[in-house]
Image 1: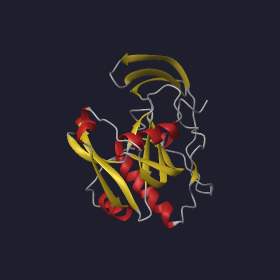
Image 2: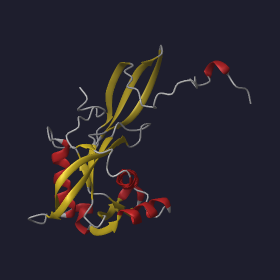
Image 3: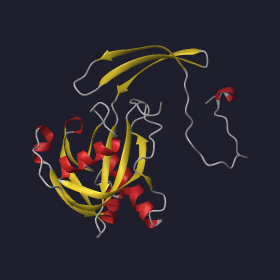
Length: 222
């Protein structure tokens, strides 16, 4: 196998700076919606990358929020519902799209916790945020940690896939075991559970305020 040294990734072994993603803004030569969907669209961009035109198609996503709530016993409410693309009823955190124009992400998370789990919480923090599929979607997702959990004043009507949601309280350590054993494979649940366990083991020291600016979401970063 022939290796092109000129194309090899560059490395700086002497650097001791913490690794961090870097924002990049290549020139967008053209951008159009190639497919209008019921929930989201497929966008086609042509970019000038280092002098070379590249065409990329991706899901143009609204973004979403999720909630990892935890009670005084260390239990987390998770929901099971049908997801058609994977033909499975998977276990998830309460979550939802940012599809209401102008809605604050924290307000959206609080709404989803109430609508999907019939719960409210007194204390909120930012747990983690990430991109779900960087090669095929611009979906940015933020997971909040909610504590001081109690029943919502009213239950919500549910429809479509949500009509037969099952709610279960599972200890955080059991969730981590399920992730490591591959019994649950929802990415938001996995990332949320592993992050929460790591944060808990550090006495929740890494937590950030719930209103921390979401600088990496295309809609909010400015």
